[in-house]
Length: 175
Image (tube, rainbow, N blue to C red):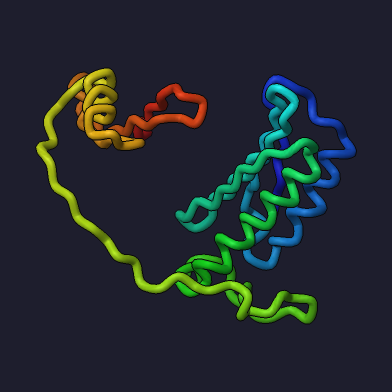
């Protein structure tokens, strides 16, 4: 797995870059050599934040953690990342590298991680009319949801607006 480390509004020290790469290579057994892991380091108001994103086989894995140091945030993000993989083990076996889930001698007992059962999917229908992103945000706020799917009236594309953790809004537009 190739690891790309970036700093947002900061420079990442080489020693931190090496620690991140070393720890992420723990997941090499799940992914092949062409997989790229994107790691973003941010420092905001004395809090260190690490965000790990890996796209593999059409599945997106993501973990974001914050702490007082980057190493602690990295450890927490690694635990979260591993928990995602183990929790969805059965579904992922079809997508990740063959033999990735074969037990290793130093592996944690499988019983520690309860696998999720079948998904309970609730279906909701609504009028899908063209609107602007501003109208979609208004509709999302009226419904008190954290995201809203809509058809952009200008481009005709299906887009998503969402509420960000910082209180702002985001817009997802397909390529």
